[in-house]
Amino acid sequence: MSYDEKGKGGAAGPGQDQDKLNTELINIIQFSEKVATALCRKMDRAEVLGAVEKEFTGSGKYTGSVLLLAEDRDNLEIAVSSVSSSDKKGFLEKMTGNSLSKYKISLDKSKIYGKVVREAQTLHVKVSDIIDELYPGPIAKLISVTLGYEKEVTILTPIWVRGSVGGVFAMTAPVLAELAVPSVKNLAAYISFALESASQRVEQEKADAEIRKLSAAVEQSIDGIAICDMECALTYVNNAFAGIHGYSPDEMIGMKATDIYSEEQTKNAAGRGGLNELQRCWGEETTHYRKDKTTFTALMSFTLLKDKNGNPIGHLAVIRDITERKTMEEELKKAQKLESLGILAGGIAHNFNNILTVVVGNISLAKMNMRAGEEAYETLSTAEKACLRARGLTQQLLTFSKGDSTIAEPIDIAVLIRDSAVSALNGSGVKCDFSIPDDLYSVSADKGQISQAINNLVINAEQAMPEGGTVRITAENVELGQGHGLPISSGKYVKTTVKDQGEGIPKENLAKIFDPFFTTRPKGSGLGLSVAFAIVKKHGGHISAESALGDGAAFHVYLPAM
Ligand SMILES: Nc1ncnc2c1ncn2[C@@H]1O[C@H](COP(=O)(O)OP(=O)(O)O)[C@@H](O)[C@H]1O
Ligand SMILES: [Mg+2]
Image (cartoon, rainbow, N blue to C red; front, side):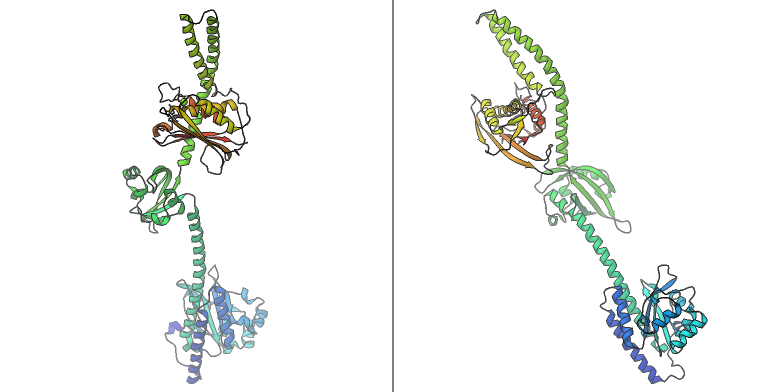
C-alpha cells in the first residue's frame, strides 16, 4: 500500500507492541544517520555505492538496494544490493539462473516498481509481494519460504536524479513499520544527493579538462586572440596578442580597442555601423599601434560574441602580424619586376654592344689616319670616350640578362671586398674603414660580378658624402634560421654591410632605389643598385637597404656560404 496515498501512516500494526516499535524506529534513525555520515565524503559513484553496501552488510539486520534506471528508462538495474554480500545471493541466483548484477526489472511488468518510478510513490510492502511479481508462481513461493521473505517488509522510495526519479531505494527488514518511512525516504535523499554530486564532480572534471585544453590552445596560439566588451575595452588577450603589440597581457586588460587600432580604421568601422554593430568580418587588413607608437599591418577577423540568449556581449578578434609577409611580397614583386626588365634590357644591351663595338672600332681606325691635336682628332676622341661610357653602361645592363653567364668559383671574399672598395675609392677624399674577421665562410661566386656589386655600393656611398667621410665596411658570418624574414632560404651566409655617413635615403625612396633607372642624381644612370641587386640575386643571395634620414645609408649583402 502507498504510504504517500495515505498521508502519514503511523499506527502500529495489530500485535506489535509500541515499545518494540519505538526501539526499532530509533535503530533505523540511528542507522540512517550512520549511512549519511559514511556517504558524505565519497567522491565517485563506485565509492557511494560501496559505502551503501558496506553499511547495510555491517548492520546485520537491514538489507538495502539501490536500483537505477537503465538508459532505456523502462528497466531498473541493480546498482548495488547488500543481498549480494549475504548467503541469500547464491540461492537467488540459482533460482533465477541469472547473476544478480545482470538482473533487470521491467517497469512495465512490475506494478510495484512501476509505481515508485513512474508515479514517484513510496511504498511499504511485503517482500513476498515483490517476489510474486518478479518470479513465476512456484519459484516465487519457494524463494519466499526458503529465505523467510514472508515475514519481511520492504520500503521502496524514489532515488532522485536532477529533479526526477532516476531509480529506487529499497530497504528491507523483518520489522519495518510504516513509521520508518520518513527515515527511509531521508536515507534515499542522502544517497540521491551523494550519487548526484559524484556525477556532477565527474562532469565538472571533464568540463574543467576541456576548458584547460581550450585555454591552453588559445594561450599558446601564434595568432593574437583578444576579447573586448561592448564598449570595446579589452577583457582578455593571449600572449601572442600582447606580444605583437609590445605589451604584457596584464597591461592590455582594460585598454580600449582604439588605443591599438588606428583612428582611421576605427572610423571605417564606425562608418559601417560601428564596432559594436559588426557581426563578423574576415580578412581585413588593419593597421595597429604598438606600445612604442610604431605601427604594423595585421590581418584581422572580428566576430560578435553573444550570450546564451543571443544578446551581444562583446567581440572576439583574431589577428596575425603580416608585416613580414608584406615585406616578402614587396621583395618578390621587386625581383619579378627586375627579371622581366632584365630580359628586355639584356636583349637591347647585347645588340647595342655589338653596334658600339663597330662604332668604336671605326673611330679608332679613323684616328689612326690623323695626328693628335688636329681638330677632327679631338672631336673623334670625345666621341670615342662617349662610346666607351656607353659600352660600360651596356655592360652593366648585360648583367641583368639571363644569358650572361656567371662563373662560380671559390673566392676569398675578404680580399675581394677590400680590393673592390679600395679601387672604387681610388683618388677620392672618402676613407674606408674595414672590419672583416679572418674566419669568414667560403663563398662560391663570380669574382668579377661580386666585385662590381661591391664597387657600385661603395661608389654610391662615396657620392653620398661629397664633403668626404668614411665608408664603413663590415663582414660577418650569419646563420639564418626559421622565420628570418628575408626572401632567401635559411642557412649560412656571409653578410657584408656598406655604411656611409651621408644624408641617408628618404623613406619614400627606399622602396624604389633598386628599380632600374631610378636615380636622384643629376648624372646618375639609376643602374648601380639594380645591377648589384641582380648580381647578388643570381648568386642566391639578397641585398637590402636601411636608412634613417641624416644618419647615412647601410646596404646589407647576403651571399650564401659554401
Ligand atoms: N649610399 C647612398 N646614400 C644615399 N642615397 C643613395 C645611396 N645609394 C643609393 N642611393 C639612392 O639610390 C639611387 C639609385 O642608386 P643607383 O642605382 O646606384 O643609381 P645612381 O647612383 O646612378 O643614381 C640614387 O640616385 C640615390 O638616390
Ligand atoms: Mg650609383
